[in-house]
Image (cartoon, rainbow, N blue to C red; front, side, top):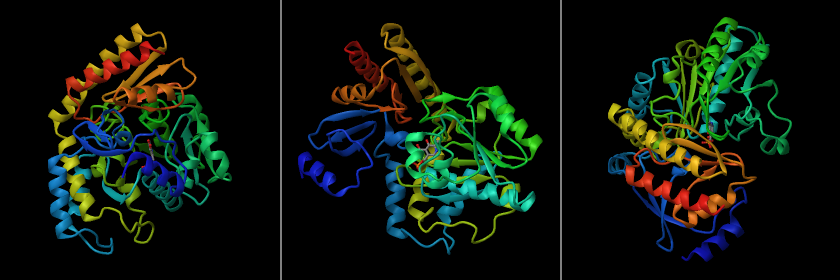
Length: 398
Ligand SMILES: Cc1ncc(COP(=O)(O)O)c(C=O)c1O
């Protein structure tokens, strides 16, 4: 089927919640995607931080193939080995965590965190302790609970009234949080590195201060690592270099190796208040996805792999800084590991995203003036050079 026909079908039958470029993607290999015309795109979007191991990782394919033939899906009413093994591995690699709840997406992982925090507060404190503190610039998802924690008028306004009891502090401003965290707050949710908000790392004093405030005031601290977790910033968990740990952590994006999977990790205090029936999901952690996730987790947590991410991140940062020197429209370069933002003085980087794609590089926005680069974590020097060259050419014509 040609691209025109596919666009027509999409326009007629798919609910219009996305604005898409005209090309139709057909297959992927390594760090490249190919459209129906055979054109190659160097992929610096990675399914928005999903395809950490690129396309066609042979070990993921083998694991999925083998498990698919054996057993694809059973209800969570039953035990399966891949799920138990994945839970063990996640908990063993996450110092604060004692248990994991599996689901199918980032927003669901956040919904689970909301429910677990509410139950914890009700059981251990009082029925009045129901509020959440979230931060400016945050993105936690589009379901009704997660949406209430995602302070963007464009996303929230059509769907008011939202879940009540959410207060908004300013990201990287500890005193604004200190003013809001009180006896009615059950949890404070924060991204150690904001992704959709424009690739903004938390200041160390901010995260450390939040931990202290939450401890002093009997409040749970939730780290949302859906986008920044699992190696993206050069350490397995984005919060690692900060030297503080959460009580709950949400994960998703790269975990399932391209298959849908989310996870909410909790410490013992939270785990203790959760009972059968409190939360559930039909599809969560089916054996096929778990077999893929086991490969992903093994590969990403390998110290040599994380060292590669840090090296590649530094190389990319250096190249992006050179572009910043050269092109007046780039006013800031910021990021960590392999998540980077080119902050511009442009009203909208949409046209830049289009021009990059025309030149064979997929990028995406993180807010109107910000171009985001989120390559597969397996990128090599030649791919980084290729991306930098394309960006150089595109910015030269702005
Ligand atoms: C930090 C963060 N949390 C939650 C979500 C929601 O994830 P999903 O789109 O899988 O529901 C995202 C998605 O971008 C995210 O970046």
